Image (tube, rainbow, N blue to C red; front, side):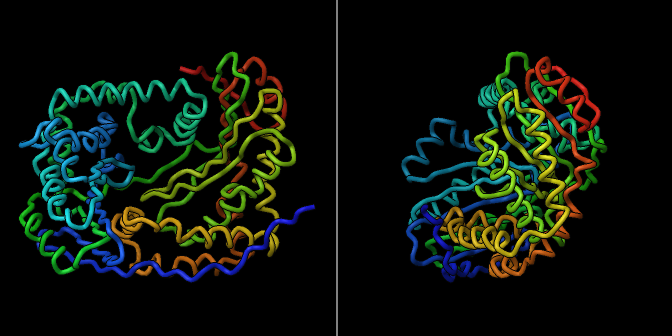
Length: 447
């Protein structure tokens, strides 16, 4: 029998040093000089994520971000693309729940030219009606296509069933067909004007540059940027609560998509490190309990996993798997058993060590590129985390004990409050699921 290799002591790693400045207009400037790199990556963040939207305009944040790379007042879409190609600059713009990001990567010698283009994108976007119609059409098609894919349909329906009415997290950050379909280019222009502002923005530069010169270059281009964003929108997520089963009927399905979970934690939860270790042990690494039981021992699935999704407000905790229809009830029972099990007793020292060794060992891989390092600064800026967050990250992981994991599991894993959502053939699974004593059952249509 071949034995698994034993993990060795992780190699030393220190996250690069960085400094933050603030311009008079409130713009935060984060500089991460990496003199041994050839590339430079620039990310400009602003408080223009999906959580800031009026619910009637859900999806406007994503559309606004996408439109930024389709031209400026001076450059139409074709001229904009030609400019990026000529400079060899990789430009992108996107939004998440908690922020929007526009940025680029380029050779260090093109930093200033890239900054010129980035500033033009942000402060003088074209926001062309024809491009808006094209991108909105693509977004609508993508949302509808997602509903034709069992996994993505399960993801969307789960959050809609878990969060209470009126909570923004109960829908996709990209919006719904109804809200996206009703948006106009005027809505995008108004959103940009109100949400893209220096007092709620940060720029991160990581890579090959001289810090004083880079700061001066930002000051020249963005020091006169005006406007004032309203700041973070706050809300308290609530769930519908109570253990129940929802079957989303998809006649003819040969598999069932399972989603089980409830409310998790926010980004500032003091239990953050024990929680992410607990989630990894339960379903975040290949040798996790869920994957080992449902895949390796029972052969029910190609992969079972779970994760926390901490945001500015409380995000979801979700366990998921795709299983053959005939084992749907058994798989749900086994999954719920694993949720119960992690609450009942602390993990063994060996099990915890294996998970922590993995998390600590892969940590440096996230920062192999300048773009990865720039992205790592983003949560510090968006969530106002301590500046030693990444410097202390490994030590905080290594400090998590079996008792810490057990306490996190008892606090944060709540099987009695879990929503069990199944996308599958209701005619084949409804009766057995309903009679299994796992919770009250309701059936919903696929549409």
